[in-house]
Length: 543
Image (tube, rainbow, N blue to C red):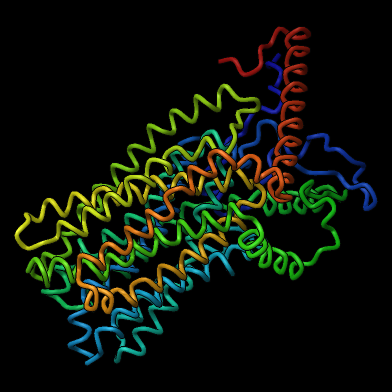
């Protein structure tokens, strides 16, 4: 006599099947007793099982991390492209006879297009899913990046670069969304480091990797490298990244069950939304980021803070050539190496954030439901808010020709460290504080960040010419110092402010309800396993 079958034992689904099919039905799913009667008036309500291989939260750890790294690579490739071509600005000016201001505008237009991702691709991904949006947008990104190589004049180059960024900006919303699809708050820290490290590391890597290539092979070879990077990421993502958005997956599962059985199934997440059209959903998700951005003080002020920091980072891409080429007399082929200090600081910021994640997990383990207050995320931002102005002022007043260049580079290490610490901390804070509205909070944050990142490089060169390199470099330090209190204020007063916010309160209630339902399911499963052991002597989940 064969051993009794384990109840709800997890049936592993191969990766290729996860990628190719969004409606995979296992035996456990097919034979599960769903709540409801299976009629139009009372459909079966489909949700994730206690052990469910298709649930993104229950995917194997190695698969989650692989998907995270591939998504981060797509984000890295588009931020790398934002600054890489700036390494060839002299070659572009020479070939097309364009002004220095027009060539610098390429970076600004590219970064400005980052606002399109959260505004358009994020709402569409909540209707059609992450996977199809990734494939369509990143496929077009690769094609447009390749077409840029053949640009006959500066106008075509700027237009194609803008469109490349507009489609590639899907990575900005997609990467964070996929991470939130797969990880609960306690386990999200390491994955978020990859998500935040990519957009900060990419712009620093661009000039370092491409200065020599630009000098010896020209700007078209630099654009070719960008295209290859985009293409490899697109190919790997298409082959290896499955759909992770639960509402879409449960809708597909319900439709497949209805087709197989003839009964009526509906996703539990769609209850109450049966009369909402895709157009209505899209309109609502388009409006919500602006409501959160302009009506919720925490989201607005932290978004402005991050936008200023992001803007100063892109200001450096216009400022470093002035400081290191014009003042310190570095050649074009070596001036890109000046970004190594910032990169080292960003790596140190990731290491520090990894250790801080250990602290956060200890706090989570001692908190009901493993959900510490979002303010527990703000410690790195408080540290970074202090080191950022120090690094910026250090850089501003040590870049004299008679001072060794390494002294100036130490300042860039400090603000590279600060960028990562502040970005990671605040993004995690917004996600934890606004959970079900996290995508909208991050979307508003990303839009205003893109606007600042696009604007700052445009006035950098005139500012440096009129004020001189030391006072011009100090401007960003004064801005960072003025914003220093933000993380400290929200660490103390954040809970009181969030209690007055309808969106934060609704998110909290949703999480509490979800935790109660999952606890009830776990207790029911444990009871069933105990009865099975008593009746048969079989111990579920034993080896």
